[in-house]
Length: 158
Image (cartoon, rainbow, N blue to C red; front, side, top):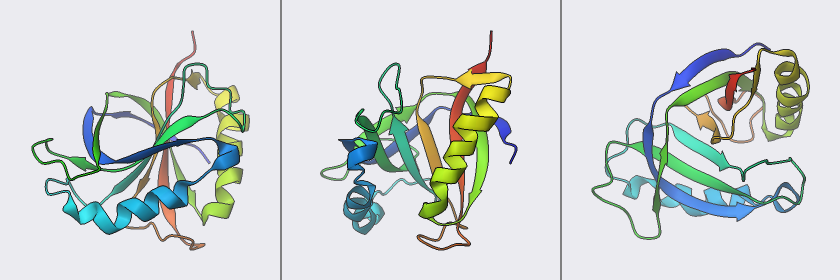
């Protein structure tokens, strides 16, 4: 599984967020709150959904370390903000983009490969910017044929 290296442009998002750790991973709750209300976002760009993770500085992947997870859609502007939703801007940056096929149970295997095999053997290192998945038209929740893009922030090793 080889990634494509891409530059993600500065993008505006509207959605919801929550803070938790891998040992207390409540992403289903967050998506459960967001999905019934996503159509309240009037200025959405396309139909893709984004699952964004913002890690603290020097994130160590410890199961107890907390991070912020966002469920969002890209928007053209922040002119209308639905109640209980917030804005997020992801700045332009370099990413390694992997295509993940399978349901959520296969994600651990994919991320294990990315961080345990590909990244250490590549000419890149992890950058401290948002990580995200794009859930596009081929995404099917809990389906073995589901596809999503995994975007890992990278920079060239020095």
